[in-house]
Image 1 (cartoon, rainbow, N blue to C red):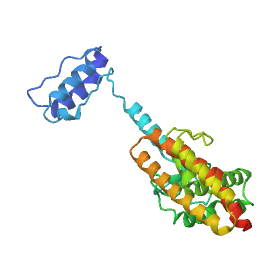
Image 2: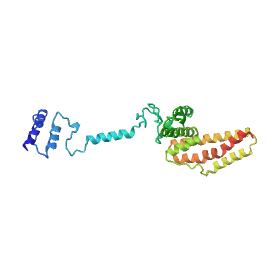
Image 3: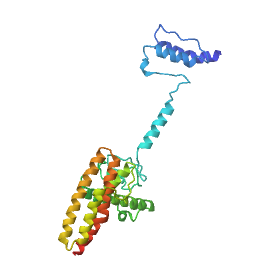
Image 4: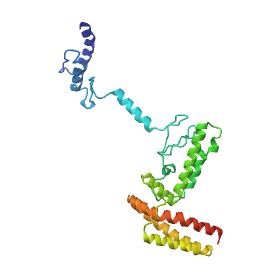
Length: 276
């Protein structure tokens, strides 16, 4: 006990110099060591209470735990290159490392809209898609990494194929509509039967007009008529999706775009090409 008092005395002397003269240190005991120290520090005018210091061994705040959790959170959100460990910078999707020029593995959290730097919405500017598509292929095309490791060649094949699919999907209104609904967790049955009598009649009339057409001029007239219908349907889908009425959006998609474009447009294009 005497040796312990010797060890504790210099420390208590130091705190007497720091604390106000109105404070007095309690006698040392094994159970009161941390509790008394915390109490005196909190009562001292030189240690503001707002810092919330707690030297108790039972404190719920652990500096080591706090640092570990912060590091884990940083690691989980920071994307690094698999080859040089460089961090992803900027807002560009991390498909390619600018530091070592290595192609990165596919990250499914990066959707097709993010690949092209677009907001996730149905109505987009498609004019700039081709330029961005070519820029990606200049970095991701498999022919550019034919001399690199098998791992990176696989990454290149996967990333390049995904960018191609993204470009084709977003370029067409129908495929873009189907994709954006899938992002919302809605799977579209592309072969769903038309149930609207008025729409069904209109589709049948268009098909009959195609069958009865005798030359390319007549087919062009049918094509123009159907383009108008597709634009009308596209506008209806865009309005429904913007209002977050997904049921109505699916109805517009399945009952109009899919049936008309899928079953009739291809036939018209085929007959125009052959120039009946």
